[in-house]
Structure formats: C-alpha cells, structure tokens
Picture 1 (cartoon, rainbow, N blue to C red):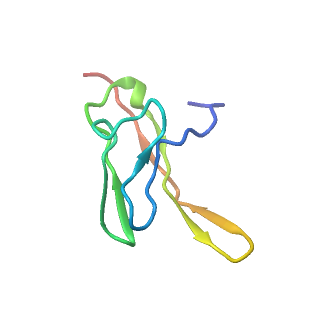
Picture 2 (cartoon, rainbow, N blue to C red):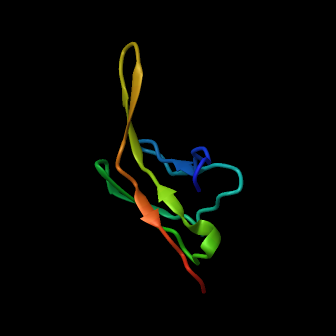
Length: 81
C-alpha cells in the first residue's frame, strides 16, 4: 500500500529450507527452488488483503560487505473472491 514499508515474508538460503517470518506460513506463501539460481514465490488462496507489490532479492556475501539486489517487483491486485 502507498506509504507502507517493506515486510519480509521469508528467506531462502542456499542449501536450506525457507524460513518464514512471524505471521507468514508456507501454505499461504510456498517458495519453490528447483536450483540455486531460480526461485518462485506463490501466493495461495488470495484475498484483497494480499494486493501488494512483491519483491525478491538476492544477497551477495562479500568479505567485508553484504549487498542485496532487488528485482522490479510484481504487482498483485486481488479485486474479490
């Protein structure tokens, strides 16, 4: 929503299962990772409250700094059930 801050849904680190933040569950937001370079977040049983811009990012771990790179995002608009 306009003026709203980003909310982390889950993290999916290399070699481990996704870890979900409080209030988010795998049944609602399953993450598919068929290989190390591709991931998909699915929004299940959508309702108008799920309308938002969803972003994915990748972190590049460096010796000194960790950088995060974000995609352009996907706008989801749910108008009714």
